[in-house]
Length: 112
Image 1 (cartoon, rainbow, N blue to C red):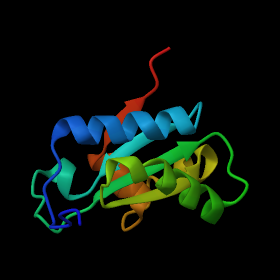
Image 2: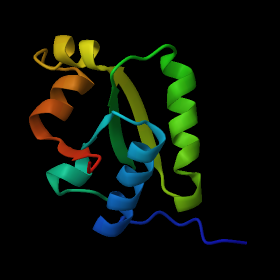
Image 3: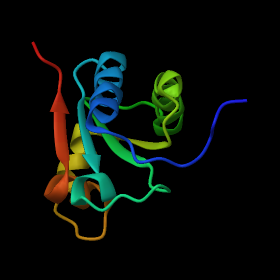
């Protein structure tokens, strides 16, 4: 049985997770936010990603699909999804995930 103890993820794992999300969502921007960006993760912390796509038809379906993309890495992660329009609207509103991601986030973009 695999060891499922909580762990702190290294930068290589975070980078790989972001790359997998970018590959699965062409044209998207991926933002890591939360404790890993603030520099205070604990062994119980998960990775918090906001995936900003040009357009989103179903937030729930897309969040499930993108979370499944990370399954091979065996990481604890929250993957939230937003359209570009939603991100622009909410990124200036304190107390929202969009605001936190915009203010403190580490941005990943696909290399052209």
